Length: 405
Image (cartoon, rainbow, N blue to C red):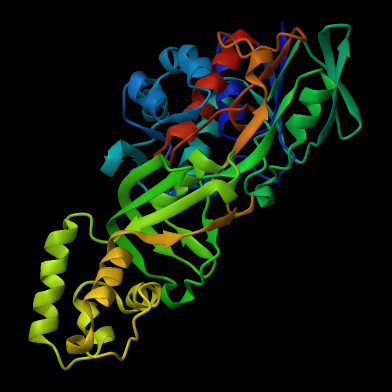
């Protein structure tokens, strides 16, 4: 019986193990942590947004990098198959805003348990506390893996070690080392779906969450990104859903060439907003600007906007000049932010970069260089936006690797 070894017991590794075992192969899963699915436990704020209930075409539209490569996997094992798999394991699912799929229990641990039980029922041998140090080959074919000093003979090995995001969960780039040893090129790993540090001091608004604002990124005057959504001010800069999406688009670009602007009132044209300001100033002429502005913005953000407009917070509304009002309008509709860095891997939802896709067969996930070596999940140079799409990449590529190993 063909022996398949899976290196890594996360989302893609567990799905690969199940898929391989369901094909009648002898499967051994090696996980270096004390438990399976350690990263799964923290996804979706502990609730685990395990996929997105959408068509393969819509899924691929939300892939930032690797969309063409993932086409076969997306249609072979789409979100509908992922949902059917979990429901077959007895895990009840629900679909929330944006087609995000969660377990009804709201417990990420139930997702891991469902994967583990499916693997055990299929006959997978699961070994914890097993650190793989080497994948041995004979010419261009895999022969064994070395784990905790033991040489384990195998006919195929599936590398499902994850990337570098959340290293506390065991994602320390082991798979990159295995890939390079096999002759594969790497696309330099970078954090994605992560907050952005700004040159501007925005701590006055720390903790303030804004809905329905428009964030725009330009490079050399050309718009790279412009979307409406939710933004969160932090001690270092900005975060929240809008910013996480932005980070996936700009993480491979020189940040020094990127300018960010924020429209706090996208529903109001500048002329309409100006008329509103004039009315407010007329009705509340003796009040200080910091109080007048609270009808438009939270206090912390008001401080940032007035600072950007070079307008004193204690200035009375009836003292504001036309030029100062023009600057205030500009600060409300086109508030400038300067990105200086992305937050690190310890905060990144996923890793962008990894094993170069040109060395992998997209129909099977097998290495084009070494027969019997497969790669799946975050170790590959594939990443997507938030909303369950990255876990769907893990499940689709894991399944394809498993049935072909």
